[in-house]
Amino acid sequence: MSASLPLSGRRVAVTRAREQSPELAAKLAALGAAVIELPLITVTKDIDKHSLHDVLSELGSYDWIVFTSANGVRFFFEEFHRIYDDIRSLGLLRFAVVGDTTAAAIRQKHLKIECQPKVATGAALADDLIATGSLDSAKVLVISGNLNREELVQKLEEARAIVDRLQVYKTEQTDLSADPAAADFRARGADAILFASSSAVQSFVDQAAALKVAKDAKRPLAGSIGPQTSETMKQAGMPIDFTAKTPSLDALVDALVKKLG
Image (cartoon, rainbow, N blue to C red; front, side, top):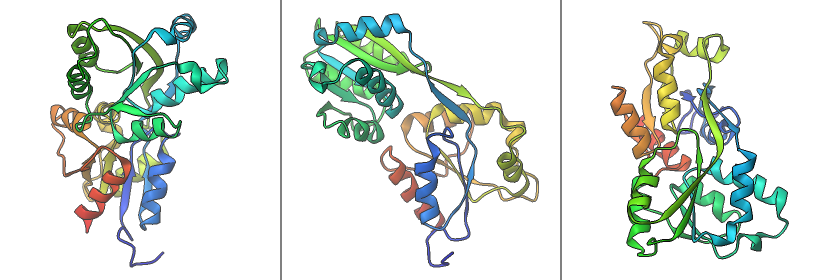
């Protein structure tokens, strides 16, 4: 491995779900890092078929559809394409998203985003949607997971929108107590550990005993992808050593390189 690479010789722990970590791991490996995968959460499709049928049969009646994560985009469109073979079946829906990763997932569908706040939080998205002046009696569909915060829906309803929520996935903690990578992390530590979601932070805190590094191990610097993840880290009393400038994997990697540089 070339010693000239910016992360050459550095050990970096990633905490994304196993099926989501390859992209981040590849970015880090390309920069010379040795990647330790600590999949603190699992993300799986979880949809009530009756709710899905109700929503898809009435898609044309919604004014806005809101996505708060790339997972929501993936699982929603898996079901949409299973039932419809024409993207025009979405009708005249306007798209609103939280975060650059979610936005990229929507753009891959060749769909236009009409509302994306600069700050990647549900509350900021609600404020931006309210600012459009289009919510009074508007029908809004919020695509969510089981851990989504209620603030987005509450703000939209206070602005007189009619909000339906469709859960399409669930996030659960992964038990890493017997995981070989976790044992390596405990024994040797790392230069940095990256958090890309609040749920991964909470899982890390809840599994503190299984992830506590040895006395002579390297204590990792902790990096956050954005405001909501940082807020959860603060509430848990965790240090935040560096933060992505924008809530994206590329920005998180950039912040890591700058911190370790």
